Image (cartoon, rainbow, N blue to C red; front, side, top):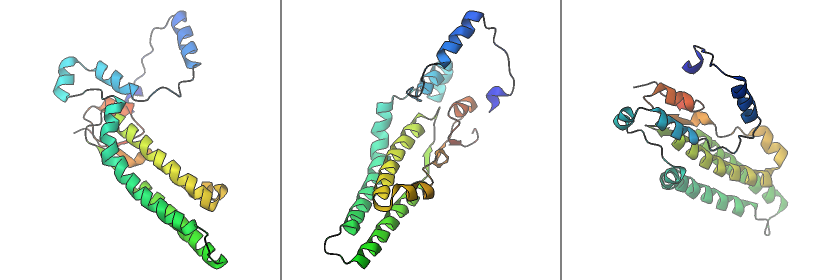
Length: 194
């Protein structure tokens, strides 16, 4: 992005370099990506922040919005698919030929739901650094993980790994007027500045 088009070296003392080396050795994998939202808001001039209405939204507030608007409708459809798959994979008094056909139908149901999930697109029209998009993607990925587990139970793990493409950040779109805010959350698809 434009952040690295011009490179200015920072004046670092040996103590600063030691501090950076020490920080690089930590495991940063558990750092909540939404921390960038706080950094974004604090980097803005207070007058500009007010003009833009730019505020950091804590994860729990985001989840309160994402749950009824995204997750509940997805879960409702996923529950119906799970019920159909359970009915199809219930052996009961089925003849061997019927078991195979029903298993194939169950796999088709699961793959169809997964394809539908991968076909969804999500938009945040004032996305800032992407916190709503990040939380939404994590929630959709949790449902996808459930689908994959059920598919592995029905089809077999090796066959599933060879076939599936996963839910991807390209499904999550945002509109943001601040170019550097878009750069912070660069994994998502952003429209050009308004």
